[in-house]
Length: 117
Image (spheres, rainbow, N blue to C red):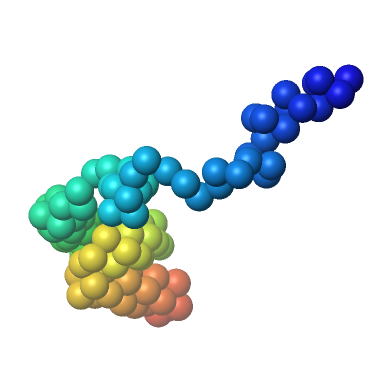
């Protein structure tokens, strides 16, 4: 049993006398920790694609919100509001905001004013 404890101690890093010693420098350890080079141009491409997707969703949300002023205000207005929030999350703040506002106005008008006419 003593032999087994001794072999376990040989492999256990807590009992090692060489903790912290390595064959590489600190600069090399940073390269080992993060081997890939961070490329900012890839991030910009992703941001551009996300903004373009947000713009497309924003235009769709705005179209549905405007359509809801004339046809099925609750259905199209709610859909325009949801797509407006998605567009705002993807980077199209103004289109998403307009879609949310017009969709909310359409729902309010459709539920409270149009029944009286």
